[in-house]
Length: 516
Image 1 (spheres, helix red, strand yellow):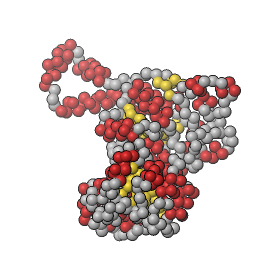
Image 2 (tube, one colour):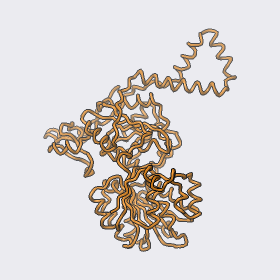
Image 3 (cartoon, rainbow, N blue to C red):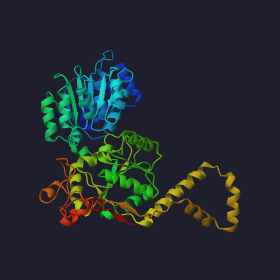
Image 4 (cartoon, helix red, strand yellow):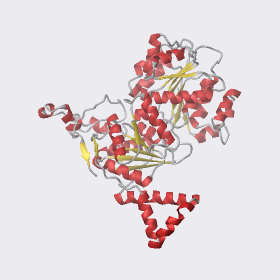
């Protein structure tokens, strides 16, 4: 296997160019028309290395984080080789989630629009009869999730005998979700002579076995570890106890007033409870996770993109592949299960040259998680102090002052001048302005909320040293994930005593109330 350790500087130096543009790839006129319409000019490192290999029909293993342009990296050569006159399926892209499948298909549609390449997304949660009817319209490119793709193969409603290109997007995530057997079954239905492009943040053993079995002399395009996080994202951690997390989150929201922010929780339950708690405190929040219907998830995402909600709360899996521009702040309410998930999370912000800010809540028993993340990203996080209530109030006052300045600059106050003059006859100007600021300022809400305590993440090294520590939810088999042996039994992290076992299930799921 040929390994390409790439950086933007190295690629440009090799071609003796200051920049690599899409003109350098000598693409067809129809493809260049679409690329120009999409606003693409300069190729990213993963694109600069992968596109030429893809055009040469070589198998490629690509390691690059979300937000580096890898969809275009495989999509451009894939679409370039499509024969629009053919009625056959010529390429399939396998993605771990419905959201990613939809977004990949949308980008491929834009890339292939002028070439008349027909793209069809296929995923669970959508009416299968509708998908069967769409398959009869002879799509050229299928983008789908493993389970639904295999379902159509078994129903014989989708035939892959003419497939020339296969893309595995976020293969490590599909491994974590238990899709490896489905992927192998899908690939077994593809002609032996085809091109495979595999993208994965990490290369665990099962992914390597897939590469060995289904790929021919793949070339490895790898973004160096030191580039896993970009410099325009400010990264902070807060050393904090579990019970203080929520008040700290709301104070940060009040102080920072993010334009668009995402809060990450580790479990579906956590996402539901955080969403409810934020709304109780006066924020407009929506949550997304795997148990929600596709329709509800799309509604939440549309509201977030439109700016009609303040906060999007998400699990790692639900947020995979989200391509939302303008996210300014990411809050890791719970530590992710592995360093790669951390990279995916904070990659939601700091895109397209913009700056971003990421804050991670670290409980005392999760210090090893912090070190593991820093070792992976080759970057130290700065410690942030817990914000105070006074700082939260001052933050909201500043929001009001900024709003007042904007209103004054619009110079549309004639209708209100008489009332203002009457006020100034009885009160001094400072008092009047102070009253206006008080009236317009959102005071911190102290409404009590209920959050189920989540056991801390325990690093792989410490987990191996604690034989009594129990894993739940099946684990991921890699990175770090686990629970400490001293976690409270009411949250399912210790063996229950005989008295515990006699309690009702509602008692065992007792919630702890955090009163501010």
